[in-house]
Image 1 (cartoon, rainbow, N blue to C red):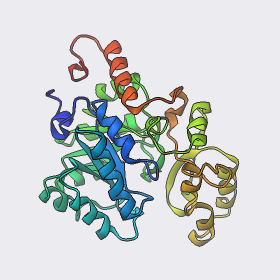
Image 2 (cartoon, rainbow, N blue to C red):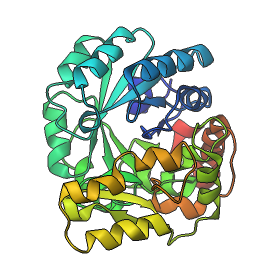
Image 3 (tube, rainbow, N blue to C red):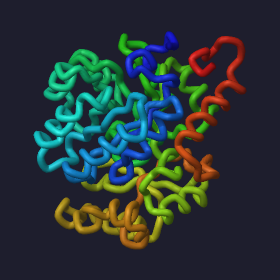
Length: 320
């Protein structure tokens, strides 16, 4: 086992974590990430409790290595049922990634069950509070990431060194990372691990529709934008005509009720059903670096190889 603290906490070979990925963070994908030596995560956002449980079991059937689940607090109608589902499957999982809300009530519940608590943060203040609440590590997500983001809109490379300076628990960098160069840069700023989301959508195991994956391959550096600012949210998505329509509505400073028909369930319509003209797709700013659809196991191994080629001496011996 490496002396890397993220690897030690999660009992993994490489400190590469899969993001929660609403709707498309399925069990087969989580297993493939773990089989590559990283830490796969089964997403619960957009799933029924029954489907979430099935995906956890599927991941356990396809890997003997540690994996976890994501619990986005604000994304469920009944959090108690999701929490109970996690506790019912605690013998299968290693950790819970907590996001999109106040983690304080939930951290002790999961830790008392023997699970590690990973908390997603987007500011120094949130990171400090997560540590005080008992988080085992923080996943610091920058404004470059796809999906729902923190309102402070801090870039990853501004955020990481400021968080590392004030917390004692391990810091994982997330947002806009798709290759070995990004990983190496994050570690140079003090991160002890990385989390990738969009890169793992473009894999054979991910249940995202092929249309979604093809759009990721075709995307360039200017392919994303932000929606939902008019209602106090920050959500990074792929540009499209449908997204242009949302932004046009937002120019009038609509109420939540006015905007809701344009956003509610529309991520699933595009990501799972492939109806990209009727919905929007989460996407991070490093999408221009994605040029292949391959197994998530291969993605992890290739990322490790890229870091090995770039790193000099024993700079990152965790990747050896």
